[in-house]
Image (cartoon, rainbow, N blue to C red; front, side):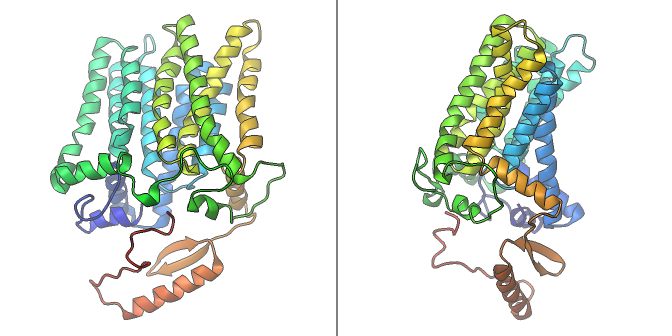
Length: 415
């Protein structure tokens, strides 16, 4: 997120001059922002913050027809789960989710009766859907099925505008592929991320019950911030989390289907049904590599959508109950899962990040050169890295390159 966009600013291109998975959207966006504000970790994390905000506020806007309580609860669940794995890093997946969720929210708004600027909203929905695929082309099934379901809710003029907005945005792939090469681009964007996972990126499916499989997950356990409640072993949490993915998706689909049967043309159905189909297609991420990051990236959406789906089922079973009661009862299962079943990564990590914001148990040690700063979690490691950086800075000459790594670089240290 720092080095690759800077490569573009230096005249090199993804897939042709350096290895890059996924689409060009994230790289070119960051490169443009770095061109204006500088290539610093603060700028990069600010973009990451905006991406998380896009998912959070997009989820809130999408679910407003279910009432403020449900919309707020779902938005907060999405934020807590998605921000945990990599903090404010401007990951392409988070950017894609932000665009996709906002596309659904804007599309649902365009479907409302007597809405002003319905045509403009339809175009914007298409542009956002296309932008999601510029970030992550492997989301094509999820974005496609969600947009298709939304199109059936729109009038013909709006439907055409949504399609044109999406196609116009996707046309940005043409210059990218011409510059980087069609074969290399297809290999880097579609084949390698989905079908040709390198050995270092593969993990057991399902996750192991008695051990943590991924190095990053084991490294995350080194950060001890405390948790006041009893919780399962870390490997057990990851194992259970993996199976909660399909369970949560089925709950969302069932709730959306029941709502669609009762309220075919309602604003609630327009919001939940396309989102449920979008959510269902995300399951490939969890199956492809079931580490905590990928599980978060899927359940950040599916757990959030469980709240309106369960609320619908409660309201249909108990139509005399107050809406507020169904909202609280729908939120309760997700809260219990985050508190008692998988607390280590989503909720504990979020609590740790909030605590650090207010000065509690802060960590992070600077490595700096020429005004650029990076942070490392170990004071000793940061000191050693700073010594190496200073020594290399003294010895190097402008234009020189240096590669440092273990043996033949065939295996990364986080694999």
